[in-house]
Length: 237
Image 1 (spheres, rainbow, N blue to C red):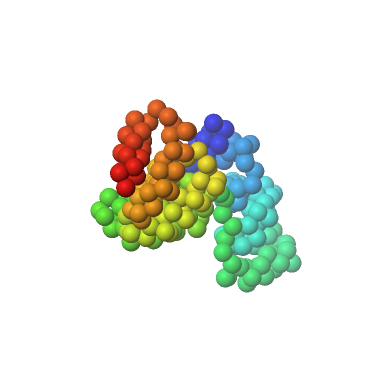
Image 2 (image 1 turned 120 degrees about the horizontal axis):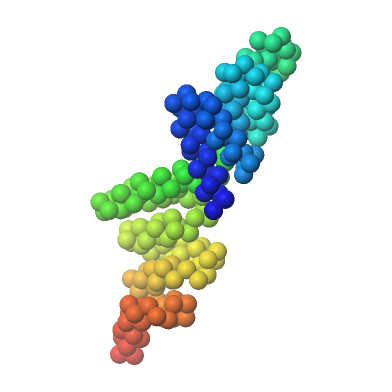
């Protein structure tokens, strides 16, 4: 609940900042910092807001904090250099200017909330590809999402299902296993892994996965019916 409230303040702060309502933007951003003081973007925004209101000391304080959190934050570095130069702090300005030269090829440091949002955006694009049966394109987007957020089990499950539907069954099973290592009671992962085993012809492994799923969720009627059919098929064999 606190996290949702915090990012409500963040999103509202950005909205007000973009519309140049800096008073309200500052209020929202300062509320956000009560929940999370380690967010470089917010300190950069506040730096500019205080600079615009001519409160240079606070502007410098926030820009320095943004750079402390992300030493390669180009906008914060430039803004801080401009302020320091304007107040005659030339040596300090040169020091931060030198930092810009080191930041050209360094990937930025992102907050995990932003990373999660980006991962979900890739997953949403992947979902749209899947709905059009463009599974290769979907798999590519899921891979991008998982590079950003490898611990998101729902995205990994969707990726595994796409691999399964592409016929890359062994790869799909590796992904299901990865999910179940982290979340062993994830019934959907067990059921979908069972389907992959069935497509490979590994009936025993398929039934074992379904039995584990049934232990976790014994009231799932479709699961029980599927397991009953497979166990009878095995007996016939």
